[in-house]
Image (tube, rainbow, N blue to C red; front, top):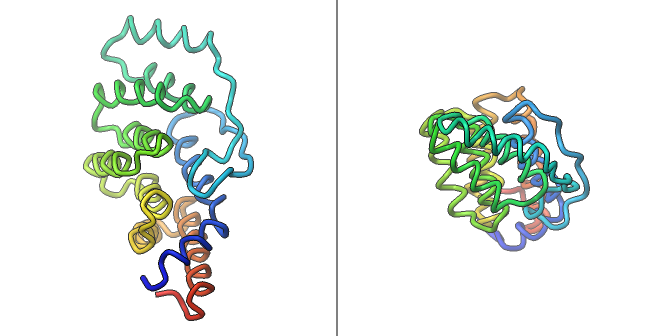
Length: 202
C-alpha cells in the first residue's frame, strides 16, 4: 500500500479508539460477565480503552480453589483469566487462559482471549499465532478474524493484512456486531489513506 507509514499514523488518530473497542468487545462477549466500562484509549492499538477493574480477591480465591479441586475443568481458569484481564494484569491472565486452553484446546473463545492477552503484553506475533489456533478450531470465528485485523493494523502496521481480515468478517456476517465494527474500521482506514495520498485508498 502506497504511503503506508503516513496512512498508518493518520489511521491511528482516526480510529485508534475503535481498535481499543474491538479488542475489548471480543473479550467481553466470550463469556457471560458484565462488560467493563469504556474510557478513552491512551494510544492507538495499545491499552484496553477502558478503566481497569479492581481485582476481586474473594472471587480469585474461590475460582482458584475450584480450579485446584477440578483439574480438568477449564471454566474456573477462564474466569480467573477474565478477572485478571479486567484488572489489566495481563501476565496473570495469560497464565490462566493458557491453562484453560490446554484443557480445552478446541474452544476458540478461550484461545482468542489468550491471543488478545498476548497482544496487550506487546507480543503481536504470538497473538497472531494464537489466533491461528483459534481458526483451526473454528475457521469462521468472527471475533478472532476481527482481532487479527486489529493486531495486524496496530501491532504490525500491516494495513493490507488488516483490510483483508476485516473484509473477510464483512463477507461472513455483514450484519453482525463484528461485521459492523469491521465496516467502520475499513471506512476509517480508507479515509485515512485517502488523506495521506490525496487519492482514493488502494
